[in-house]
Image (cartoon, rainbow, N blue to C red; front, side):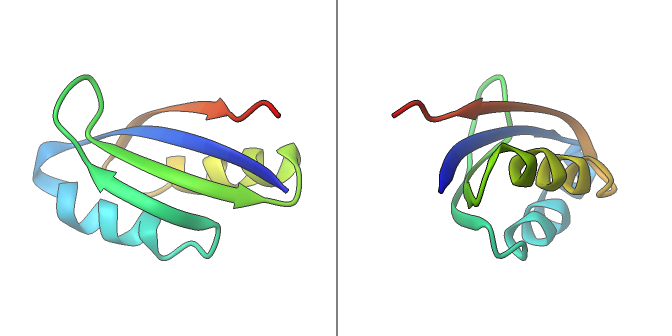
Length: 75
């Protein structure tokens, strides 16, 4: 299992809707709306790094997502 944190910038007028859409992915285990450089944080678990890549590509296609940064946990 691979754990990662995905930081997302969301268009201000779409924050709530976009946040809710990303939360629907089963890989998301925790999520937060935050203030600062990013607008939301998603903690995810996938089988491998390819799963993370696939999930990030899906997230980037959601209307309102402006930018993502992914940090993968090292064991």
